[in-house]
Length: 193
Image 1 (cartoon, rainbow, N blue to C red):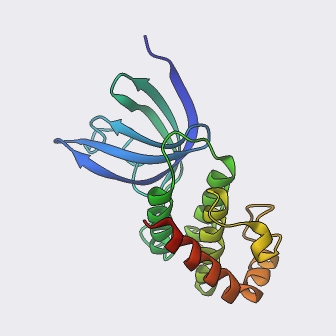
Image 2 (image 1 turned 180 degrees about the horizontal axis):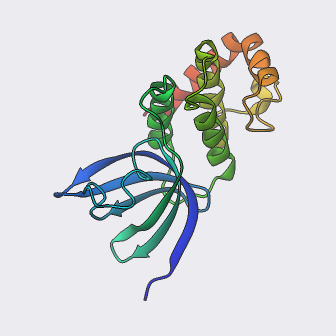
Protein backbone atom coordinates (compact mmCIF):
# COMPACT_ATOMS: atom_id res chain seq x y z
CA UNK A 1 0.00 0.00 0.00
CA UNK A 2 1.29 3.44 -0.93
CA UNK A 3 1.46 6.39 1.44
CA UNK A 4 -0.66 9.44 0.65
CA UNK A 5 0.99 12.87 1.00
CA UNK A 6 -0.98 16.10 1.47
CA UNK A 7 0.50 19.45 0.43
CA UNK A 8 -0.34 22.82 -1.03
CA UNK A 9 0.43 23.20 -4.74
CA UNK A 10 0.39 25.63 -7.65
CA UNK A 11 -0.57 24.11 -11.00
CA UNK A 12 2.07 25.56 -13.32
CA UNK A 13 1.08 23.61 -16.43
CA UNK A 14 0.40 20.21 -17.87
CA UNK A 15 -0.36 18.07 -20.90
CA UNK A 16 -3.43 16.08 -21.80
CA UNK A 17 -2.91 12.33 -21.83
CA UNK A 18 -5.31 9.77 -23.18
CA UNK A 19 -9.03 10.42 -23.30
CA UNK A 20 -9.50 12.21 -19.99
CA UNK A 21 -6.19 12.12 -18.07
CA UNK A 22 -3.70 14.93 -17.65
CA UNK A 23 -0.05 15.03 -16.62
CA UNK A 24 0.36 18.08 -14.38
CA UNK A 25 3.37 20.12 -13.40
CA UNK A 26 2.85 21.10 -9.75
CA UNK A 27 5.02 23.30 -7.58
CA UNK A 28 4.38 21.94 -4.10
CA UNK A 29 5.33 23.39 -0.75
CA UNK A 30 6.70 20.09 0.57
CA UNK A 31 8.18 18.32 -2.48
CA UNK A 32 9.18 21.08 -4.90
CA UNK A 33 8.41 20.66 -8.59
CA UNK A 34 6.46 17.46 -9.22
CA UNK A 35 5.05 15.93 -12.40
CA UNK A 36 1.96 13.97 -11.47
CA UNK A 37 -0.68 12.09 -13.42
CA UNK A 38 -4.31 12.93 -12.71
CA UNK A 39 -6.66 10.19 -13.89
CA UNK A 40 -10.00 11.17 -15.47
CA UNK A 41 -9.53 14.79 -14.42
CA UNK A 42 -10.87 16.13 -17.75
CA UNK A 43 -14.17 14.28 -17.53
CA UNK A 44 -17.22 16.33 -16.57
CA UNK A 45 -17.87 14.13 -13.54
CA UNK A 46 -14.42 14.70 -12.02
CA UNK A 47 -14.43 16.30 -8.58
CA UNK A 48 -10.84 17.50 -9.08
CA UNK A 49 -11.52 19.15 -12.45
CA UNK A 50 -11.60 22.76 -11.28
CA UNK A 51 -9.00 22.42 -8.54
CA UNK A 52 -6.42 21.22 -11.09
CA UNK A 53 -6.87 23.71 -13.91
CA UNK A 54 -3.82 25.61 -15.10
CA UNK A 55 -2.62 28.33 -12.71
CA UNK A 56 -4.87 27.31 -9.84
CA UNK A 57 -3.73 26.98 -6.23
CA UNK A 58 -4.94 23.86 -4.42
CA UNK A 59 -4.39 21.41 -1.63
CA UNK A 60 -3.50 18.12 -3.27
CA UNK A 61 -3.13 14.54 -2.14
CA UNK A 62 -0.27 12.76 -3.90
CA UNK A 63 0.80 9.15 -4.06
CA UNK A 64 4.29 8.15 -5.17
CA UNK A 65 4.25 4.87 -7.01
CA UNK A 66 6.62 2.87 -9.19
CA UNK A 67 5.85 5.03 -12.23
CA UNK A 68 6.04 8.40 -10.46
CA UNK A 69 3.57 10.71 -8.74
CA UNK A 70 -0.19 10.41 -9.05
CA UNK A 71 -2.86 12.87 -7.86
CA UNK A 72 -5.27 11.16 -5.49
CA UNK A 73 -7.36 14.20 -4.59
CA UNK A 74 -7.48 17.99 -4.81
CA UNK A 75 -9.34 20.87 -3.22
CA UNK A 76 -9.14 24.37 -4.71
CA UNK A 77 -7.75 27.24 -2.67
CA UNK A 78 -7.85 29.81 -5.48
CA UNK A 79 -9.00 29.31 -9.07
CA UNK A 80 -8.20 32.02 -11.61
CA UNK A 81 -11.27 33.74 -13.00
CA UNK A 82 -11.68 34.20 -16.73
CA UNK A 83 -11.76 37.96 -16.22
CA UNK A 84 -8.39 37.99 -14.45
CA UNK A 85 -6.00 40.23 -16.38
CA UNK A 86 -2.98 38.96 -14.45
CA UNK A 87 -3.23 35.39 -15.71
CA UNK A 88 -0.92 35.98 -18.69
CA UNK A 89 1.69 37.53 -16.40
CA UNK A 90 1.53 34.56 -14.04
CA UNK A 91 1.70 32.18 -17.03
CA UNK A 92 5.04 33.71 -18.10
CA UNK A 93 6.41 33.38 -14.56
CA UNK A 94 5.18 29.77 -14.34
CA UNK A 95 6.86 28.92 -17.67
CA UNK A 96 10.20 30.27 -16.42
CA UNK A 97 9.88 28.44 -13.09
CA UNK A 98 9.15 25.14 -14.89
CA UNK A 99 12.21 25.57 -17.14
CA UNK A 100 14.63 26.39 -14.32
CA UNK A 101 13.44 24.28 -11.38
CA UNK A 102 14.65 20.73 -10.86
CA UNK A 103 12.22 17.98 -9.94
CA UNK A 104 11.61 16.91 -6.35
CA UNK A 105 13.73 19.68 -4.77
CA UNK A 106 11.92 21.29 -1.85
CA UNK A 107 12.23 25.09 -1.90
CA UNK A 108 9.78 26.87 0.40
CA UNK A 109 11.04 30.34 -0.52
CA UNK A 110 10.35 29.65 -4.20
CA UNK A 111 6.87 28.35 -3.41
CA UNK A 112 6.05 31.34 -1.20
CA UNK A 113 7.32 33.84 -3.80
CA UNK A 114 5.15 32.27 -6.51
CA UNK A 115 2.14 31.85 -4.22
CA UNK A 116 2.26 35.53 -3.18
CA UNK A 117 2.62 36.60 -6.83
CA UNK A 118 -0.30 34.31 -7.71
CA UNK A 119 -2.49 36.01 -5.11
CA UNK A 120 -1.45 39.49 -6.24
CA UNK A 121 -1.81 38.88 -9.99
CA UNK A 122 -4.95 36.73 -10.07
CA UNK A 123 -7.07 38.72 -7.67
CA UNK A 124 -10.26 39.21 -9.70
CA UNK A 125 -10.92 42.52 -7.95
CA UNK A 126 -7.50 43.92 -8.75
CA UNK A 127 -7.70 47.00 -10.91
CA UNK A 128 -4.07 47.97 -10.41
CA UNK A 129 -2.82 46.46 -13.66
CA UNK A 130 -0.09 49.11 -13.81
CA UNK A 131 1.80 47.26 -11.04
CA UNK A 132 1.74 43.89 -12.84
CA UNK A 133 5.03 44.48 -14.75
CA UNK A 134 6.77 45.37 -11.47
CA UNK A 135 5.31 42.31 -9.74
CA UNK A 136 6.58 40.18 -12.64
CA UNK A 137 10.10 41.64 -12.41
CA UNK A 138 10.25 41.12 -8.64
CA UNK A 139 8.86 37.59 -8.87
CA UNK A 140 11.29 36.58 -11.63
CA UNK A 141 14.17 38.00 -9.59
CA UNK A 142 12.98 36.03 -6.56
CA UNK A 143 12.71 32.83 -8.64
CA UNK A 144 16.29 33.32 -9.86
CA UNK A 145 17.44 34.13 -6.31
CA UNK A 146 15.71 31.03 -4.88
CA UNK A 147 17.42 28.83 -7.47
CA UNK A 148 20.87 30.36 -6.95
CA UNK A 149 21.14 32.27 -10.23
CA UNK A 150 21.01 35.71 -8.60
CA UNK A 151 22.54 36.98 -5.36
CA UNK A 152 20.88 39.41 -3.00
CA UNK A 153 24.19 41.23 -2.51
CA UNK A 154 24.43 42.02 -6.23
CA UNK A 155 21.26 44.09 -6.09
CA UNK A 156 21.68 45.40 -2.54
CA UNK A 157 18.00 45.26 -1.71
CA UNK A 158 15.76 43.81 0.98
CA UNK A 159 13.33 42.40 -1.60
CA UNK A 160 14.82 38.92 -1.13
CA UNK A 161 14.35 38.76 2.65
CA UNK A 162 10.60 38.18 2.25
CA UNK A 163 8.04 37.18 -0.38
CA UNK A 164 5.42 39.94 -0.04
CA UNK A 165 4.33 42.22 -2.88
CA UNK A 166 3.04 45.18 -0.87
CA UNK A 167 3.06 48.79 -2.02
CA UNK A 168 6.31 49.63 -0.21
CA UNK A 169 8.04 46.61 -1.79
CA UNK A 170 6.86 47.52 -5.28
CA UNK A 171 8.01 51.13 -4.77
CA UNK A 172 11.47 49.86 -3.82
CA UNK A 173 11.45 47.67 -6.95
CA UNK A 174 10.49 50.63 -9.15
CA UNK A 175 13.63 52.46 -7.97
CA UNK A 176 15.80 49.42 -8.77
CA UNK A 177 13.97 48.43 -11.97
CA UNK A 178 16.82 49.00 -14.45
CA UNK A 179 19.41 47.25 -12.27
CA UNK A 180 17.07 44.33 -11.65
CA UNK A 181 16.29 43.91 -15.35
CA UNK A 182 20.00 43.83 -16.23
CA UNK A 183 20.70 41.26 -13.51
CA UNK A 184 17.71 39.14 -14.53
CA UNK A 185 18.66 39.15 -18.21
CA UNK A 186 22.29 38.27 -17.39
CA UNK A 187 21.22 35.43 -15.08
CA UNK A 188 18.78 33.98 -17.63
CA UNK A 189 21.42 34.18 -20.38
CA UNK A 190 23.89 32.30 -18.16
CA UNK A 191 21.43 29.43 -17.59
CA UNK A 192 21.59 28.55 -21.32
CA UNK A 193 17.96 27.42 -21.22
